[in-house]
Image (cartoon, rainbow, N blue to C red; front, side, top):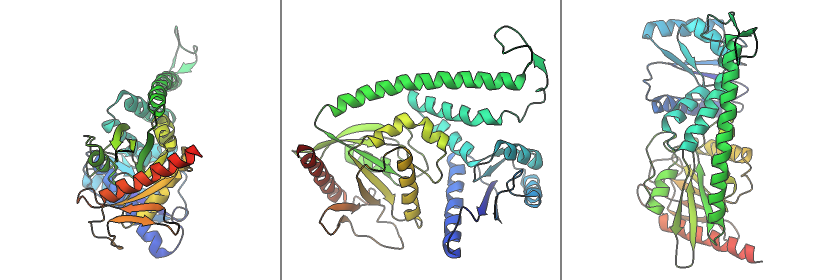
Length: 371
């Protein structure tokens, strides 16, 4: 079961805009549920001025949700919002089923998709950080006292022991990630010691970054029509013409309200974005809410310190129906500078124009560096 609540603080503005944004957020949450391999059997929505402190949705709505859980034999209720540990615990008690919030859902997807050692370490760190505040639930023995060698003391409860062990594990993971980060920095320094510039693909998840990366570099990065198909950063040399070659990197996709725990955990990976010479901001131009998606990406870029990196907007999927049809080619500003490119990776439209725009940007950067 998926639960989406329209909070007036989250969706300010005209009614039509609020409704469209709410529907887009709900559709995205449904895709997130399916991305985990779960079966979405029921959707519930609600409107509130602000979140209920204890249950998020209020007592009346909680009773309705409990009835829906019983009627459809639901085992997991997903809330398309970040819940406090208290709200999550109270909802599980009220609904009599497992409850997962938006952060936990995204973490579950990341845990399934992480392939590299660094990716798995980052996901485990984010999961443990998220879990550390939610240990209260599910324990019936927390009042028992225990002591012994290596424990905090004779008065330490089981809950305190579990929290301490998790903190020890978090510290160990951070140490391992620091080592991986040093190795990544060494490889990056080696790449940057040459004359090639770095172009990083960024954008909302499922905008087509990995498909574009594969088409340009002839790589075989996993590219599927699903959210967060790619988690691990990949870098390849891209030959543009006889004078220009660049390093092209593919990065994890962003999403609305990307959990801060994930931004923090993936800081080593996201450094590739912040240190790039140019960002290729890939946009699904066929999506009805693509402008909001672009704003969400820019918000995350600001969080990781990459908001000052020059961008070249890449409007992808122009072959699909949209409110504003686009023609393949380069879009220029009043000064004649390439600011965006309309393309379709699947239909092979505008890719030569993209290469031309990338060559122009690389030459501009080279000229600025020589001044």
